Length: 319
Image 1 (cartoon, rainbow, N blue to C red):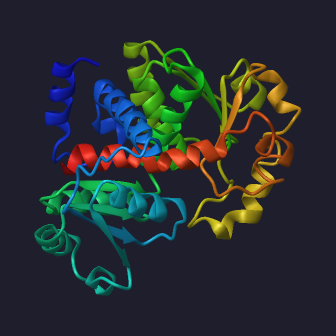
Image 2: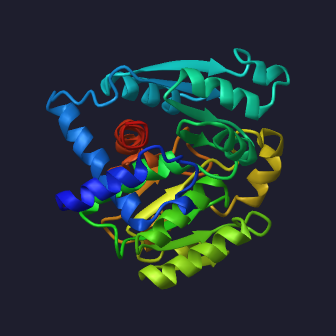
């Protein structure tokens, strides 16, 4: 990427919220992926990159997390700033204060806000009320930070994104929404196999198909895991009952019983396929131990790249 384009991207992203990949152009997504790779190189080489020195990120957690909290907190430290952990019990938001008032108040103290919550509407409302960048750490609708880490990992492993086929087997949840939108904007082929009643959001599907037609990728929805996984470069899954859907565990086990990624199913993928999972995983449920712990699995490379991808998002928006 030439210097002029870098400067243009930096100017575009400064102060911008990071709520969903639908809000970002392919050029902006690619810029952030490459920025994450560069920050990763600097961190490994012990090169100083304290571009957010003196700045503070507020981290609102209404959903618990391992990777999100640690990666954001460590990322801010490595960028020279600091992060504040704010659980729902730490804020008046948990006692009825409006999202608008919370956003306005926190904006007077902080340089950026990350929120991990349930309703996507709350993230949108927070961003509307805030005068500092808001980053979506996860909602029931989207998980854009995870997908930035995922596609950074794919680029590192495969050397390209355009033309890569991603096959997702399982629930059409927030992960699928972000994976599908991201793939459709990057010229990738995306296929999902899910049982009836567990399809992705129809608007996301339609928008992704339109993106794919424009940028040279494709989107396939099917009930057949074999059809989805055929010649896939990347094989992806998530838990069958995400956080907030635990009460449906038994019902979902029945619905997804034929959607486990195992040694028999991955035979239909390319011989050099890579297995991905956003974690935490339930071995023996959505994926067999042989696959998730096998030679094709790159789950911990993904997990590591949460740190670097999110550093790029913070550095670009909070600078």
